[in-house]
Image 1 (cartoon, helix red, strand yellow):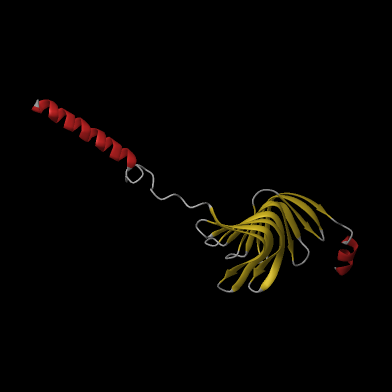
Image 2: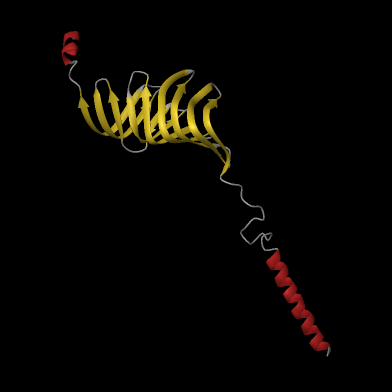
Length: 191
């Protein structure tokens, strides 16, 4: 009889252990899950906003957006339907921007513009495409794929573009260009 009682106690103990393990499964370090629920990807959303990106030396960029979402890590901001965007180099506006969306990363200082991006330079140059990235640390604009480039001298379809505003250098790859020769007579006379 004592042997049968030991078996019943052992079976009850196993059942209690299984029930406890099941009830506490989210707290176990080996379960691969945390007992704390993950915070949502977006922690703050604002509508009809004028947002300014600031650095150590002042404004990096500013834009009016229909919607701004701040990410969970608070270093990523997503802007939607951007108009009146301005990109600064020092305290001077060097580019004007318009885009369907943008993502700003405070760590890398990258402002990634996408969905119908239009950038206009101080001398009337225009760049349009579906993806352009401005880096405030290097004062550079680079395309993420093909873009169209327009100046008073002509138009170009470009496979890739990198503009360094500090050195005033523009690099383009895979170019198909159309140049306006209406000013060719003026150029000839200037020589």
